[in-house]
Length: 433
Image 1 (cartoon, rainbow, N blue to C red):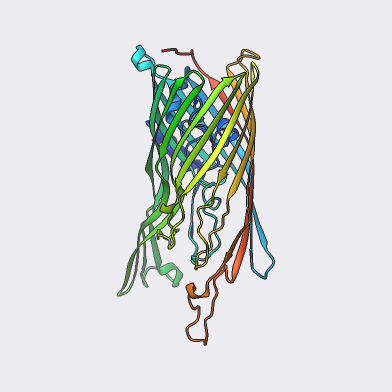
Image 2 (image 1 turned 30 degrees about the vertical axis):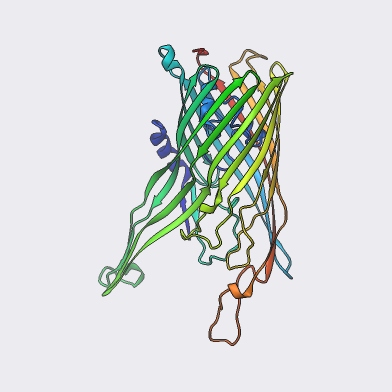
């Protein structure tokens, strides 16, 4: 079953909701170009409007109002093959658009230390996709199937306690679809059986909130420390489904579940700038053990929690030009797949490059442009099924009949290539509280 919401309608709805709430807004692979070029190692370095999700305390580094516009496009390849059979590949083009705004508040010095940020991200293809297959053994990737298909918005606040300490907090909004449905049959309604069926639909788009918060400190001139936490993010499509036909009544709730991102606790440090270079390192604990299936069921065995390690480099090559690069190791949360489920994913290495040009220093134009390219390359995953853990597809036939889509074993691989840009527009005057 597939539930889709048209992007333009949801865009208008989210703008209305998010006014009291930028390219990085809680969507996997929708980071700003600066964050993507650093492979996500942005919890400790100085922040901006594009890094508020990684650490909202970085909003305290924003000195003037800025608007960030971003876009990215990527090519995804997923390979799958059962043992003894030729493999197949799924390829897909993924794109998205982002908007972020961050500004110091006007007023006295104590208020000027407070920064406000909002952000919105829209996938190019759809705003919300919750896909639930009739077969729970369908091969799926918890990282790439669904996660890029998420619209989200966030609002955050950051406060600068002088130069040494900054704190921040915010919420990420994700859409949920409430789908009450009533189907009834009236033989006297019209001519023809098909026209006698009546369907009443009620569709409501609701927003769920996931909190996040962080701290960034600079105890030494060339050392900064950062810690950030954000809760897991999910979307759900559910509601009552009532069917009435004569004396027959079926009234069953539906609850479809899309697990976007696990809860994450990140800690890191940054060294520099030294000769124009700043190094950043980061470790992130991802709580994948909370993962649930599309039918909102827990797994047995559950996914493993993971520890991601990464780092980034920013180098001021010219007064107006910054070069960037990053690396991240992302372990797979998937345990050995010996039972009925067939989740795809192996340890992944992410490599990224990017650059940023500040046109204020080149043309005196209030603009800055960041670009990035990154790739995610996964090791080959292999799985061997245990027949004793698989059900019998036909109890009426002698012996065990196994129709599991991953039996007797399978192999998989994945690759992801992305390019993107972020255009920052500076508005107003710089505030130095």
